[in-house]
Image (cartoon, rainbow over all chains, first blue to last red):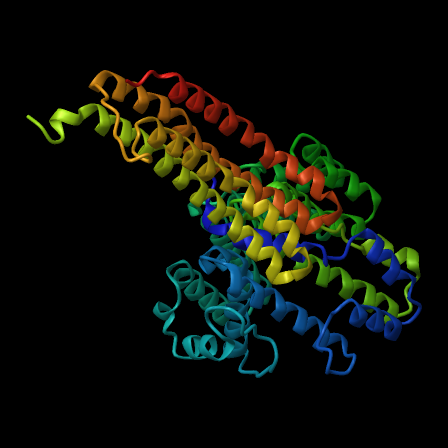
Length: 323
Length: 163
């Protein structure tokens, strides 16, 4: 869909894409021997605050903040990005329900960069005023709260809220005018379903559990995937080979970390066509995901260097870059 | 029956000149506006690209000049610029109006689309400044059709006999 309102924004994003890390930059980072050298390299590339000391967390937080600062400056309609905040929003609900039901306090477990902050979410759950939540969260909040209170089953509470997150993302994708949001929602839900199937197969979960955890989408059949997971890893691979996610089957053959890496790479592949769009919100959306993917990859490398992992082990986990 | 009704030929010819200038000029304004937004986006992040993106932004501006040129030729043809209006019958006036339409209509459409192509090409300059030459060819292609329309308008207006 051509929308010339995004002409300025897309051109600015194109100029910013030049500074995104490509494979060569990742190789240079990998060549650094220590975490300190990595931080120095990142600082030279303009990462973090030039006046602050070299600290991993501060640098990553600064880069996250930069993404949204740029978007606020260029985006015509910030509501397009709402769907990206759903996982954080539902996480806040999950964390608040667990804190209230277990009567514990765990500072630092909430995200504050979404429409309902941690403190507000805690207040809503404590007072059981679920009607203050967005419409797509009211029923699930009540159900998760009652379930945890009566069964004390934390995993079941997680499953209820995680499924609602996927449903909310998918519904937002369906309702969106922009193709990019639809593609993002489809890929997010399908990849999450595949992850659930793989993990459930490994931990021997029941068919009912899988069906309760998986969300419906167009490109994956929850029924067939959950039955395949019940039959074994080979059946999952066989099923995936017949879908648009056949690369995932190959990654499963390789290793668990290769599969996790494929899950993130698949999303970047979904975003690739946005490199050639000039008049839509797509390139902005793809840039946000590309930056988040970049930050995640840098975290993996830094964490690997910090813990003395071999280059081979780190490389196995390094995600594909957008550029 | 003097006034407008008695000078319908001149009125039609002037409408032709106005259509050429107005439509082609509007196309250029839209195109330069679109390309200008893209140019601003790039310069906001990389001011070194100013000269390159400015050239890209100016490309859709030519349609307005073509419209102006046809407008001048038309005004000259009917004697308005020389101060002595020619006697033009309604039939000849309509012929001049029709002759002005190609650059008007094609100028409007090509101006807008050349602006969009320029904006996309500015994206290439933003990512690969060394590919400026190749990037400029894409919007330049749209120009071909504005030139074809300009030729037809000039040839037509010039060859209509006015007493």
